[in-house]
Image (tube, rainbow over all chains, first blue to last red; front, side, top):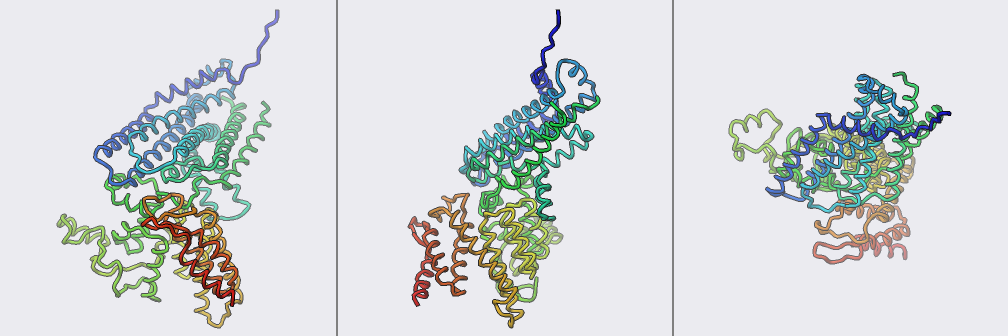
Length: 261
Length: 343
């Protein structure tokens, strides 16, 4: 009688990994700070509603402030969760029992990536509702653009999750954390600055290798009262996020595959 | 999966990411509430916005206040904080000052000034309930009695702020326009052109940038002619500049024809944030200047074509709800040009 070994599905153990990261996220006290700030914002917005707002422009300004905050906070949460995930597992030796189970290394990376991105997206949605519901909306804004923004922001969080994992694999934890934070919030500005200071034709594509998360951030466009982006532009933004995710995950899996633990 | 294949595929995907930010920018738009002067005025006058003032997300908002302060030697005048103006209004105000104080950069203007009597943000002793604290603030912070005509600095100090403004938001078209204006005012025509060309690189669809580059070139040509009266207009480098100006004006007008709504409603309550009154002012200026320059060049037929195409495209509804099917100024040009073509 022979024992037949079935090939392991690349998604085997994924659900458990996602659940572990999710629990880790819920246990992190710093994440509650973001919600407390959003809760204060909610109180202020309710107070504004009660007292009355002076003009529609101010209501839009407050909404922009709140939405910008929830976008930044969710991105920051993802960086914290994803950049610390693998180094913490290695340091605490919790990675050994995981990989001792029939879980592929690639599945481990995919699980960490998906869970961090999902956690960020859910957190963003929660923060968004805390900001969106109480803030008065006195000026016309496009609902379709709001949907586009939410979708792109969610993809942006998944892309950031992949970038943070890659950063944590190639750099020391603190350095990776800082570098990814800088890229997330200033990547577009850095490539713009390089373009402006050194406008050399063949270097332009090199500057744009720096991930630009502003392409996926339409909050200000939304509160500015501009039309939704065209289907072609929206598709290009989606493709950009997917390319970022694909390349970062590919590098992460390839690097982690041979890494000694 | 083969590790080498994965590395090569990932590198390919990374290289492919470059194409999107190079060709697409969903945040590239000329108008919008956050950049609008009237909306800024409303925000600045609101106690809620002041409460959140230090948390402002918009870097350009902060830099705008900085430029205003620098322009007035550190003194904060409420006129500049609370009055919405178009770029044309703003630059023409400075031009008026420049004419008054020609050749004496940063000099005090003794003539009656539009802003003399304009209140400062730090109140005068008569209006200040704070007593000694107010007195102390007037002594230690830049302040001048608002009844005294105010001074404009040369603009040199402003330039880094416009640089910061456009670096932090490459779609701040107003930043490029006024920054280039200051550069050309200081006689740095080449730099002004480069600055505005950089703006065009980031905002190729912004017709105002082509219009203001053309205006800058016109200023440069006038300057060269004034300095070197013997230099013929059709000689190099004026001829090249002249052609560049015409090309810019035509490009600006073409973009106006593509972008402007069929009918513009002047009523501020019906303001469309994709086409604001600032854009409307500049759109009219682009078409009129194109026709005017072509007419001056003796290109009557071409000027007439532009006027005929442009006039009905500038249809508008005035504040009383009356529809004007054509731009009155362009209509005047059409009549003049028709006569000239016949002759």
